[in-house]
Length: 163
Image (cartoon, rainbow, N blue to C red; front, top):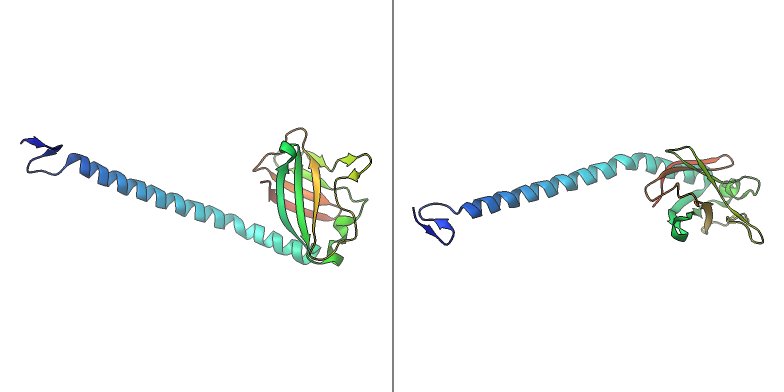
């Protein structure tokens, strides 16, 4: 058999068969990966949906953000008040907020900044307004992806993931 333009005369292109197989394998791998991502995402949503419903029904709030800020030295928690009466527990000054790293069990607190006071809201809650509090992360314990629990008085929100 003679070779002509990378092909054997009278036969199929060796390069083309390999290329088609590679393309099919890439497509199969991409579909499998997409399926795993969807399945993983759906698997974790049941608990977070239940927890969100509990926070709304029992505590009158919705957590809108939980992320690192100030170059990672603070954890920023933002939540919207849906029912001001139910949310009052989160605004009681004597209730000291704690953010607990679920991996180590270590506790982060809200820093008290001398003249301005604790870095949290403790005013009378108003429906529809978004409130905030910062937790001291000077140790670098918490990072993006950490799973934490927030406790404020009787309020407890578990399995929150820091973004």
